[in-house]
Image (cartoon, rainbow, N blue to C red; front, side, top):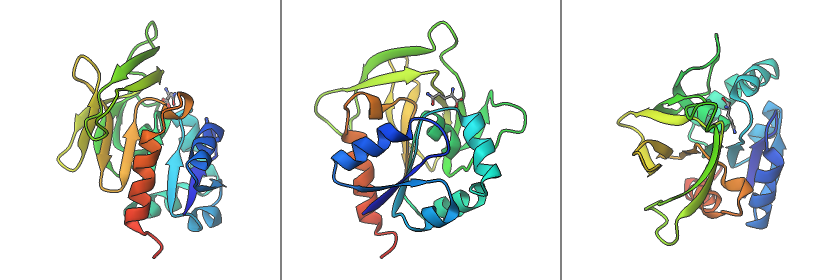
Length: 197
Ligand code: GLN
C-alpha cells in the first residue's frame, strides 16, 4: 500500500514517520502526478489558510477534490480536518476547502488563552485505553450532518473526531504523541477500499 502525505505545509514528516513505522510505503505528495500514485492520503496539521492557498497555487485543489469524490481514503488532522470539511466558520476571507466531510468546523475554536491543551479521550471504536490527545490551535466540529459520524468528544460534548465512509478527521494530533490507532484505523480503510484494485 502506498500512502501519500500532503507535503505542501505543516507536520507531514511526523505523519510519514508514523505511517512508515506501521509498515506503509509513504510518498510525499506535492503534485497531481504524485497524488495519482497513492492509495490513500493524509493531510497533516499546520495552517489551513496557507494549505488552501498553496494547494490552489500548485494546481492541487482540483485533483484533491476529485480524489475525495472518487472515494480515495483521506485522513486529516487539525488543519487537515479543516481542509476536509464542507463548511468552515471563522475562516479567513475567501478560504476554501476540499470538502467531503458533511460537517461544519470552527477554526481556532478553543480561543487564544487555551488554544493548546492535552486531554484523554474515549474513542469507542477503538475500545481499550483512552487516546491521549494534543490540541494545538485546534478546530471543533461544530455541526455534524447526517452523512458523518462522531468518533470522539471532549468533556463538554463537542465533537473532535469524525468519519464518513473513507474519510477520517481529528481536531488533534495523534502523529506527535505515539498514538498509532487512528493511523491504523485509516490504513484499514485504505486496504478495505482497494481504491486502485
Ligand atoms: N489553527 C490552524 C488552522 O486554522 C490549525 C492548527 C493545527 O493544524 N494545529 O489551520
